[in-house]
Picture 1 (cartoon, rainbow, N blue to C red):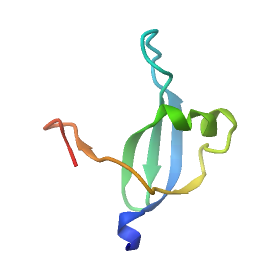
Picture 2: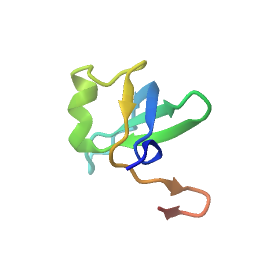
Picture 3: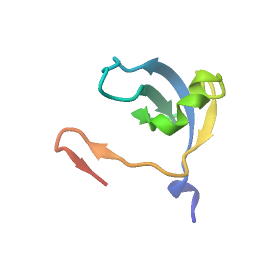
Picture 4: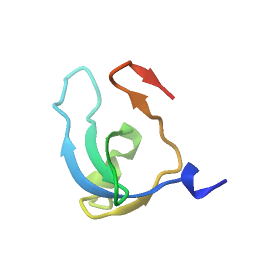
Length: 77
């Protein structure tokens, strides 16, 4: 597998998404690769990383599993 399949990015922002009593807590992330930025939603199973401050602004991450969605057309790849 090439490096493009597992991009390395920096967390440049973390915030709690507006909680809905009917759903799990979700965190919004802003990720950057040095050229581009990307909005992301952290899977709720990984919330503990934010809550334990293992994932915070400035953290460098390698994305091993992710889904990209084109919000304009509501299609995911």
